[in-house]
Image (cartoon, rainbow, N blue to C red; front, side, top):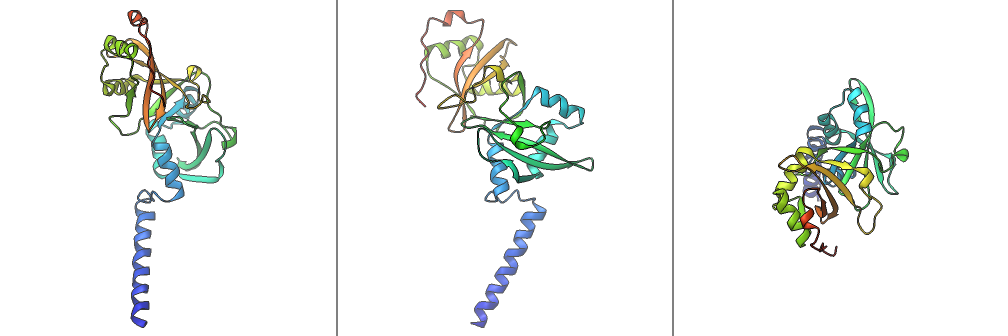
Amino acid sequence: MDSFLRRLKYYGIGFSIGLLFVVFFFQNRGCSWLPANRVKNSILERVLVVPDAEMKILKSKGISKKDLIQVLNDGDVEFERSAKRGNPQVYELLKEFNGKELSFYFTLPDESFISEIHFSESNARKVKNTTNGFGTIIRFPADEDLVIVDEGKKLTCIQEKMGLINPKLILKCFVKSGKIDFSKSKLRAHPKAIQTIVFKDLSGRTAEASAIWYKNKINITALNVSFANDCEGYPTQNVDK
């Protein structure tokens, strides 16, 4: 019995030391089962977007896009001050900048592939889905196959006209020039929220993509371009989600 208790004691000491290493030296990043990291991972699985009005305020405070990513890396999730129910869910994260603790609000809209970052509101319950203007995309999930396109002759025709028949090329265009058009997005659409991404194709021409979140992919359901009028005669075939 004494031998068992001694082994149990040593196990407890070793476990505690290991936990301290994870919490303090690795800043909890190795503990995906911790509630705060589960929230952060849910946010990082989405496209991070800053509404342009919020971006102006953040720039005036000297807060960069990299700083916003760092908030998710080592900021503190304030569960009691977050709005965990409703659409969107909004989580408040605290991080110190220049000796001052600041609050950042990250949204998780239902069935959506975006997470908005807000700064100007005074608390999480005042943060709503943005419905006007544009949003700057600051981060995409690390998935080279993040974009998929519905089947259909019209979509294929438009992709050919754009020179973007490979969805990976569309993702590259999104990363380089994509912005969310909130006025044309429908975050409360059912069964899936619809986002509109405005971007430049490989020739610098403006295009719009309507997309939904399907199995952790940006699923393009429609493309709108002004230079592919001869594709209009084709029917659009949507895959049932």
